[in-house]
Length: 350
Ligand SMILES: C[S@@+](CC[C@H](N)C(=O)[O-])C[C@H]1O[C@@H](n2cnc3c(N)ncnc32)[C@H](O)[C@@H]1O
Ligand code: SF4
Ligand code: SF4
Image (cartoon, rainbow, N blue to C red):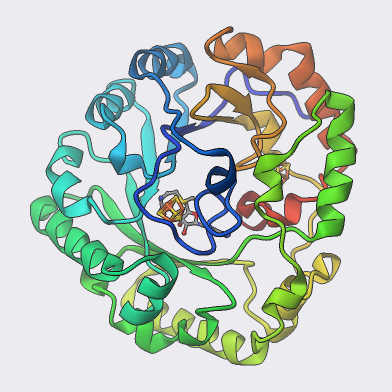
């Protein structure tokens, strides 16, 4: 039987909610995003973050930062230093807007990998992520690579989210025009979404935990009809060709879902999630991973912050991690996955 690790071995810190961009598809600040409706100005207090890193140090966890936009967090250098001094590693993603300016501050205690979010060639990316964003992200990569020189860290990755608006532009030509000499990894992920039926079941699943509103999960709500224009055969062929390009250039490629067949992509975009090649019945994350929101709420499920297990401003992480509520949560997950798990990137990658 699975037992929770003594302390989480993966800790995701949502350093802040704030973001300078308004990417159309974003579940936080996009058209349907949580913070677009409830507002988002909270951030983790630096002292509490540093204390938490001390508390978790015996487990030597791996860290990820989440936002909003992590490069807007004041004290990021102190957090990087604390993580490095405790022998842990961190990776995180950025929208790249402030990367050129922030690059020098990343190097004394560099993250293991910095993912830069780019969603297609310049015009397509900027239509999804904002005017001028492509050029800023690329300038950031160039500056970071120049300052890094021969040092191994941070590795630079590019994350691309495939949506109904950009799918046709995610091609080998797009990838070939990225600054591949500096790029160690490429992650191409399908836009996360949950159908209205999945969300309704999820709300019922959370009721025994006293949760009555699900503003975070609701932001994932979309109908498969929104993706009807995606030609899955064309997209699959492009992803296979991108795979060949990456293999030839020695670039690690992460695809979510893993197998880029027309049938698999079609299953995803039509909401027929049970037909995915890699459909799963279990997830180990709630036994090993904690996610701490900018409000200090602890959950085990990436981006689904509606089901809080406790708050780090009231209790230690260890107390929350082993509390009765956390045990009940794991007991529920042992029975089977949540209705919205197919909208979780961990479902497709962990
Ligand atoms: C929420 S952002 C936070 C970090 C930073 N602001 C950024 O854009 O990289 C983390 C990642 O989620 C991706 N993302 C946003 N909306 C998404 C969606 N609906 N489905 C899948 N990924 C999404 C972003 O493109 C980014 O790569
Ligand atoms: S930059 Fe990141 S957090 Fe900000 S709107 Fe875009 S995807 Fe969302
Ligand atoms: S796949 Fe499901 S159980 Fe696993 S982390 Fe995601 S939401 Fe949680």
